Length: 464
Image 1: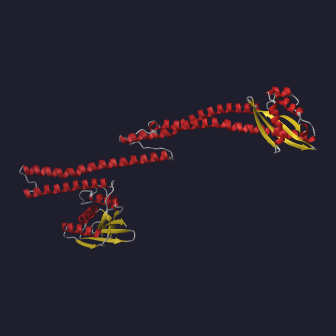
Image 2: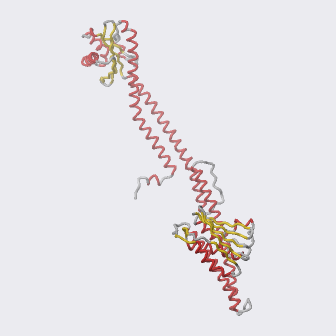
Image 3: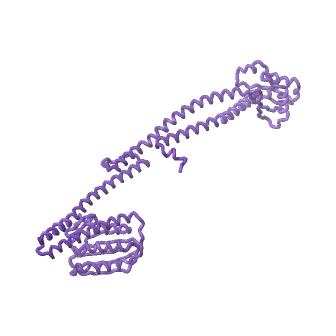
């Protein structure tokens, strides 16, 4: 299905970051291009009125308050507009509102073709104005005139003072400022785009480098470490990939080591079976008679079957660990009793002591049967006279202790007991204890061995 984001997703991250930054910058520039003229026009309009009112305040204090007449005197000066910031003032007393007063106003602003109607409008506004001072604006031709009418009363004289300016000053300021602003905007856009592209390159460069490293890892070219001297998310990602690289190297080494051990462990019984079967076929009995020679073949076949079975079971456990398992209620006492009944006849010289609590917990019954079988198989080989099994329980966990009175484990071998293909002095195929540990940890438990005064104990702790 077509997505509106598919175009961006198909582009490089450098392009995506650059185009997003460029869009934001250009969008802001366009927005400012529309808003600034409006904001500045309003600002300069207020400045024009402030200029008029400031000048008008000085006129009222200097002349009107001293009973001096104030009117516009130079028609030519206003027409030529030598100073676009100049303010024109016209004093109109109440008793003097006549044709002569009107003519004064007309004379002052006739250069803009002000008609008599506008003159009358100004006088009418001054007469009807309720506020002391008020701002006005009028469009005349293609220009605006801003004016302020302020009432006064002094020594029995009253009237209003008209002060005005054209919008030429405001428009010139606005035009000049907008031109400079436009130049600054173009410069800012250019600089911002350069910064955006630099930032995009800064962000994407380590990602591209990481991509190359990951491709090397995919080709098993993982001898080169991944080192990024950064503390941000990219540095964290690089650290995770470096951890993955080390784990893959360890797993690959483990697999190579495992394959070598498997080939060695499987090669020996196969070689024995083959040589003995060829000898018997030729009428030669390596063990003196047919029965003894065939027993060697049978024992080695059984040994080979056990190794293959353990390998398949370990592979099954690794598969199940990645999928949701179905747990059921199991009785660990019943499992131990069943396994002991099967194994105790393999060595009838051993004494068995069981102190078991009737405890149920959630787990996979077949797997726990394998755990007990593998541990007891190991204990039977090393025990001298007895094997003891105890179950304890407290508020935190259920503890299973399986003890034998055999030789103590060397200190350096404790960490190796549960490794794959590790063997003791009389050990056999080295997967049983590894499988036991795998199952216990899969059930969120813990398994370990310790040397006691009279032998070795294996402990399994299962959280409640």
